[in-house]
Amino acid sequence: MEILAFGVQADERPLLERAFAGHHDIHCLDVFLTEDTAPIAAGHEAISTSVNAILDARVLRLLAAGGTSMIAQRSTGFNNIDLDVAEELGLTVARVSSYSPYSVAEFAWTLAMAVNRRIVRASGRTREFDFRLDGLMGRDLRGRTAGVLGTGKIGEAFTRIAHGFGMHLLGWDIAENPACVELGMRYVDKDELLAASDLISLHLPLLPATQHLIGRDALRAMKDDAILVNSSRGGLVDTDALVTELRKGRFTGVGLDVYEAEAGLFFLDKSLEPLQDDTLARLVTFPNVLVTSHQAYYTEDAVGQIVDATVRNVDDYAAGRHSENVLVPAAPPGTA
Image (tube, rainbow, N blue to C red):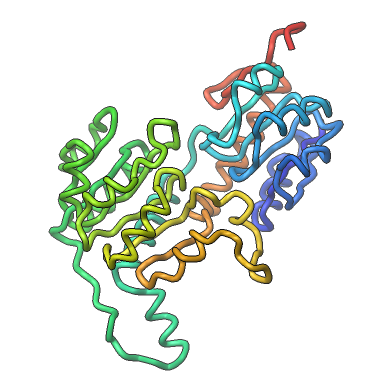
């Protein structure tokens, strides 16, 4: 079977080609799957997509009309896929249910430390041989409070690092993680966590219930000198509300690896084009904000695990097997 892979990064391509060798042929494209590019998949029974692909009803119908019956998404998140329509069309959809949680947790801490210690500003100054310390003062994190919203595998990894820093630990989730409790985490309601935490990190899936979880009221509940980090999904934060609070001079720092309108921007070179997103353009002007382009997962270890899981997903589809990675199983014969 020949697999057509959309949105493949240059570093990712050799990993995909090596992993699929001896299993299936794979053709890698750097373009992302959208309504405009979906016709390229015609004649391919299986395709692979990235987290920023657009798999709405229109795209899924185009894929199905072109003969595609299996979609292997190279990410854990799947909020970009209309699963109901996929099921209606008889499409099998699989994702990567887990990969190295340390990749994201460590990057979240990289963002937190970078904004706390003004690393971007300091680096820019020293490149111009300006070695002053004015405006670069940070804070010790030992003894301060870290609030972790979402304490699954990634949240737990983040918590372990916070524990290593000697921080007090607050958590919020639908269920307590015993490993986090053992580290000294105290589970509280969201409002208490927001009000008491010096550092807040988000490690939640994007669902209807979590859309804009950090909105106007949540942001106003946070300390004026808090640090906010989001390495999970952009839609967890109401960016317009965040800009409003930043304009008031609030927050020591904000580190964002994701953005709610990142599709069509992140993973692409837009440096020679006028930026049409006014909210993002305003956001990156704040000296206490650091925005990166959804790279928290992007380590050799994590991407290697994602690629290996994608190969297994395609193998399982070809063999008629199911795993925990399958979001929409293959339709029974004659029902699609």
